[in-house]
Length: 379
Image (cartoon, rainbow, N blue to C red; front, side, top):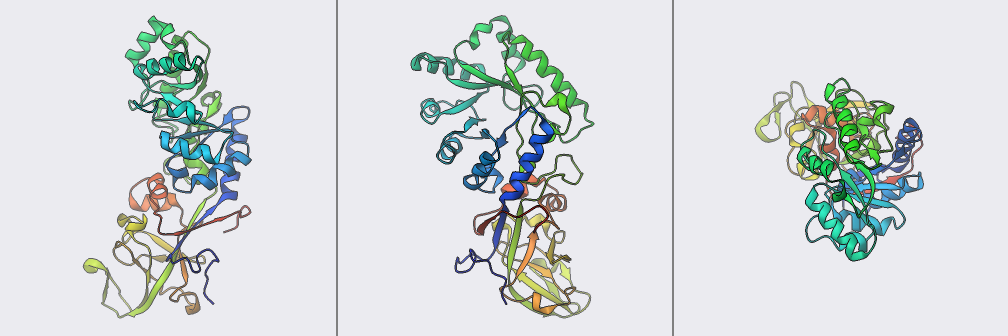
C-alpha cells in the first residue's frame, strides 16, 4: 500500500515538506515562558524561514505573539494581509522610495541611520502625527544600525530624534550562539551605554533566539526569536532544545540491485563493496538539498539510518537501502525521510558544513507542502 498523503496524491509533486504548526506553537510558548514578563516577538522573514508565513504567522498570533519582524517592506505588505491586527516591523529600514508604503500598510520601519531618521521626521511632519518606528543601534555587528559616529551626533543633539514615536531601541548580537564569547557581554554593555546617550527613555530589544538562552540580563523588554521557533539550535555545536518543525519526505523513483564493485552516480564516487539495493529518490539540489551533503547526508525509513550513495544531483539523489530488511517498505512511489526528527536541519547543516538557517530557508517549492498539528513527540 502506497504511503501517500491526501495532499500529495494527484498534486504532481514528487515529494512533500511537512510543517508541524503544533511544534511552532509549542516552541513559541516555551520561549515566552523562559522570557517571563519580557514580550516574545517572532521573526518571520524569508517566508517564516521557508516554512510559509501565511500559515505560521497566524499560528504564532493565536499563541499570543503580537509583534512580528520581517526583512523587507514587500514581506511586510504580504504579512499585513494575513495579520491585520499585528505589529509588523521591517528590519531593512526606510529605504528611499518606500516612504508611502509604511503608513499605508501600518508597517514599522527599523531605522538604521540618521539619513533614515531625517526622512522619517519629514514623514511625521507631512502626516501631522508621530509615526511609529524602532531605532537600530549598532553595538559591534557592523552591519546595520546607527554607527558610533551617528550616536555621537545624537548625544550632542538629542533633538535629531524628535518627531517619530520610538517604540524600541534595538541591537543585534553577533555571537549569541557562543555563550562563552565575551563579545556578548561587551555588546550588552555598549547597548546600555548608547541607550543612555539617547537622553530619552526607550524600551529595548537585544535578544535573538540564542540571546534568550544567555539569561535574563539579555531579555530586556522585547526578544526577537527566529530560528528557534522553527526547531533551530541556539548554541553552536549543541543539540537544539526546540522541537523539530519540518519533515522532508521524498518519493522513491526506482529501486535497483547494484552488484559488488559497481559505482553509483556522477563521478562514480560511491562504490558498493557487496551486492546492494539502491533507491533513487526524487530530491536534488534544485530542491534545496545541498550538493555538499553528497556522501555525508542521511536518510531514514522508520528508525533505520541509511547512507546517501554518491553525489546529490539536480533532481535526484541515491540512498543505499540494503539495510532495510522489510522490502515492502522500499518501493517506487514510497517515501523516505530526508529531514525529520531523526535527522534535523541542524544535523544536515553539520554534515554539509553550513548552518541550519541555510538548510531551512533553502528548501524549494517543488514539494507539496502539508501542514499538520501534531502533538508533542509525534512524527
